[in-house]
Image 1 (cartoon, rainbow, N blue to C red):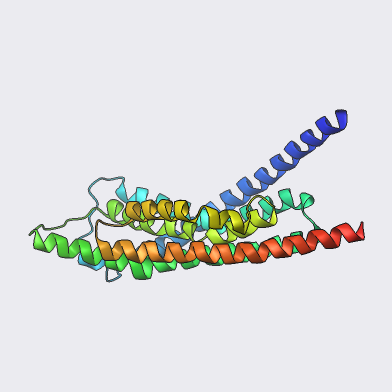
Image 2: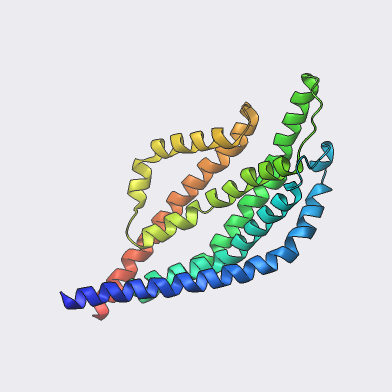
Length: 248
């Protein structure tokens, strides 16, 4: 009983150390993001999508709000590899040696998928949505005067969720290697997962069929890819467990 209590205390202390490392690195990333935010904001204001509007600052605090939003997002992106590594380091003692090496490789894959999701939403979905909004405004004879804070908030609300949604294969692979998810379970709940993805797509797209399909179809493909990856990870986990058991 005392050993278990000491084990729990050791886990809490280990978690505290990991969180401190993340917080320290996040503050360093925030300082770096203050220098990166300005050129990114200036660049985004001169893209074809932004130049379709007259971007204005309606409140004295709007430029600061935009600057802080981008600084925070950039800091999170810079800190994400550290967060993932600290998470891996915290759970790795409970994994087999083979699983430790495999799950460590998930970190660059996760970051790559996050950037891929943002790139997909920004270069493919975002221009389509902006074009739809402009055409709708012209049809209704509405002159759009957009606040710069609202424009960039809309941009972040459309792109960041895609970066997170593209993490689905990595999350499924990680949970499969931990034994929390199986490919059989993912196949069993496929129709429910499709419904959830449909709802998510409806929330992040305008009420128009083509844009909805542009979001829904990639999400469905991501889920099917996740099932394939889960099967692969499941077989690898079974083999690793058998090898570890034979060595013992």
